[in-house]
Amino acid sequence: MARDPAARNAIEVMLLYPGLKATRSHRKAHWCYEHGFMLTARAISQLSRHLTGIEIHPGAKIGKRLVIDHGMGIVIGETAEVGDDCLIYHGVTLGGTGKDTGKRHPTIGNNVLIGAGAKVLGPFTVGDNSRIAANSVVLSEIPPDSTAVGVPARVTKRAGVKVNFASEVDQVNVSDPVAEELASINRILSEINGKLGE
Image 1 (cartoon, helix red, strand yellow):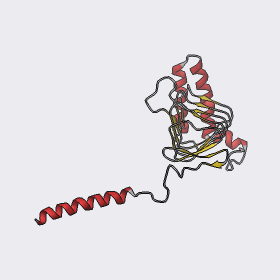
Image 2 (cartoon, rainbow, N blue to C red):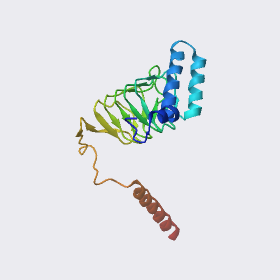
Image 3 (cartoon, rainbow, N blue to C red):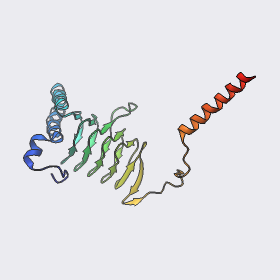
Image 4 (tube, helix red, strand yellow):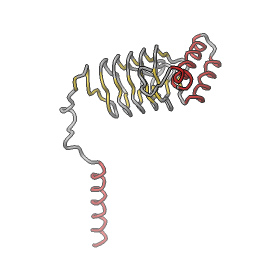
């Protein structure tokens, strides 16, 4: 309730919030997974997915006080680890790239916020107290106390201080790929017209 201003009372949260239902189901599924009851674990997780729209593999490790807000479309992979006091919005994927074996999914530190639609892909760590912006695609490690933005994601703040990328990216004279393609098509058309006129 402290992290969702739309929550009116505890009964509403306990009965109606899909994120809480998915987390409770995951705790049962994970217990079964850890004790070798794989089919039961998968059955619990798939039923939860059907009821909530949130898919958490029974092998994933979830810390205390995870808040899943809205939740629809969240996918958390088998070797993913999520720390304590994290906040995850809808459409988030904690997944793999298909290139790794063993540990394939990310480790999310404590008190991390992951915005709607973000994709965190690969076996690396997102440090404690970090923020991942909505729709970002994170493909490499994020240090603690950082804010990551974009596709692929870049750290834009560390410990509240902006990171300067001016030497890496010219943000004033950015080329327009559509205009470049249109200019290329116009050149080809001019060449064709020139040949037809001969």
